[in-house]
View (cartoon, one colour):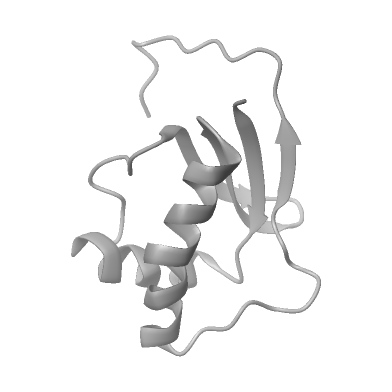
Length: 100
C-alpha cells in the first residue's frame, strides 16, 4: 500500500547537506527505488519533506540504507519527537507534466 511521509527537517541547510552525501548535489538528482513523489520546502512550521512511497517497506529501506548513514556521516541525529508522520494512502494521482 502506498504511503505519504511527512518529515520535519532541522533546516534547508541540513536537507542540502544530506543530499550532498547521497547524490553529490544539494538537490536530489534521481528518485530512489520505491519513491513516487518527493517534495521539500519551507512552511509555517519550518522546513519539511513530503513524499509518496510505493510502500512502507520501500521507505524504511531508504531510511535505513541511505538517510541514516548520511546523517551519521554529517553528524546529524534524529531529534526527539521528529519521527516522520506516515499516512496510508487510498489514492495517488500524478500529473507527469508537474515539475518545479
